Image 1: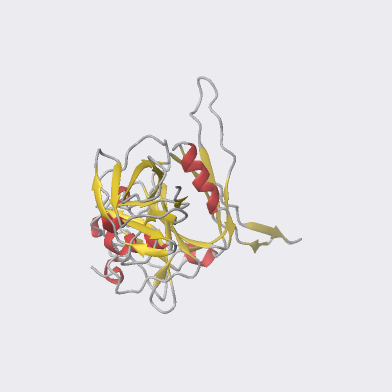
Image 2: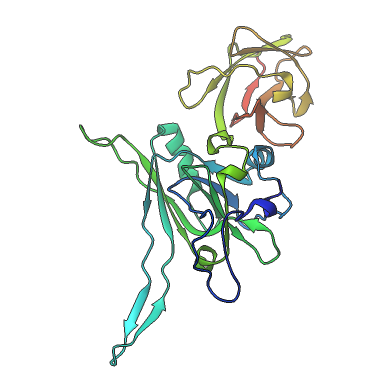
Length: 310
């Protein structure tokens, strides 16, 4: 269903005076545990069907970066600031800005990737709660988007203290447009969506390595594919369409056989000494280096390269 038809579907509102009645099913938002980082200025048209099929190519292209499944959340928003004159009249001086802290317990490769998110005014964010609801901003042209973020700061990894909390890393996000949070927002309720936050695909890093260095007259390349989170878990099920192979800069389409699991034999024309071979993962339909394997996304960076030896 189009996003414009499900946004705020069970919420109430008014344009003349405040509607403070409590009849009907109230739309409430829970504890933030998920976030979708959108490239600054990204707009979601009102007619968009907000589902995994819509999100996946944007994630592959880097337009959206998902942060899913925070272990805990802290609201560190600033308070509104007031002044009081000699007559005792209080006046609002400054409206506080929302600031959220999401904590993750996901291991060191995840923490290294989190550090790439450090920025200032580089992203907008859609926020998801533990019940599968999403809150996003509304635009004057009827489209939707993320809340405008100022600084995004991955904080120092907290080490485990014996008997205490486990090791974790947090990301601190301040939002700079207070009006979005007070008025210009919409809630997508979980019962109007056909997916859970855990269904949103995230990009997994892959290490590609030659089992044997390419040499003169070879017609096959043997390559292992392991997750770079642990450099041990095999990536299985890749097909020829998931790879991009180049010899001396020219794309070559190989025949690919997986044998044994996680090891791929690529059959090509004969190589010559001095040829430069590069191999990566690819999605030709989007022309991006993130490939989609049954709703699991993989990226192999940097490219695996080798010069053919004699």
